[in-house]
Length: 307
Ligand SMILES: Cc1cc2nc3c(=O)[nH]c(=O)nc-3n(C[C@H](O)[C@H](O)[C@H](O)COP(=O)(O)OP(=O)(O)OC[C@H]3O[C@@H](n4cnc5c(N)ncnc54)[C@H](O)[C@@H]3O)c2cc1C
Image: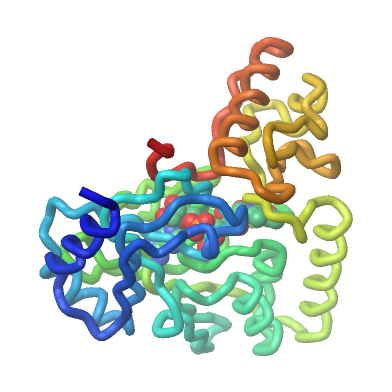
């Protein structure tokens, strides 16, 4: 059966929705690396009720994958079977709540949340200015930088489980650790409530500007990249290990290890997901040989290899 036929048969099995169902949607346009095969079906729900009704009626054998804005995703060239859910406009509101709190839908970009906090005079969320993802990705990855992480500012997260039931998870039950939460992988975050402190909008904005400047000089943020490729092993920096193993600037096909920051992989143009993943594995092998350390992927690699 061709992929097109399989995708249209899958659409026939899906519940009807108010949002958008697109068979064989290329995911390369939806990830920072700009690589990867198609979603068998991409679902962009209209709002929470649409998503919940869809999940309630979705046959349990159909796999579900959630994507944020793809700044931490390497989608393999063969694409993703089943339904890929991407939350859009209906999940992007940001509002202030009493007591220096901010509520944000998961499709809101981290940087937008940081800016909204600054405008409202809520301090403590400035670090989000430096992370190019969405709040959904920040919750799943416990995203952070400059000494602060999502776990330090979260009050609670709202999720839908695979059956479409709504739960509110207090921050202390999120099981946060470095770039990880123990919330079940099939839970879909839909909203977050953050706690800040009263602050002066001008000072908050100045701190955000400093973060932006620092990012631009130390990371290849204008390239097609996925951020830090590997977790920092205990007592080491991944970039230093890669540098020491001679990886800086190494290439495979259209993929390259960044000259600016060795823990970043870059699509220099025309790279496949296999080039990028292969180059990452080359770095793991070099580091293993040179220093005996086993690097662990931080970037989420998902989907199938090309047949
Ligand atoms: C230039 C650059 C710099 C970066 N710097 C940093 C940094 O300083 N600190 C840092 O922590 N990260 C950094 N990253 C990595 C990345 O931005 C973060 O991990 C971010 O939180 C990912 O958000 P996203 O929306 O892009 O998620 P995606 O990459 O789309 O997805 C990441 C994971 O989150 C899951 N996910 C997304 N939305 C939801 C949801 N609604 N419900 C459930 N699961 C969901 C996905 O299934 C996937 O497992 C950087 C990336 C780049 C490209």
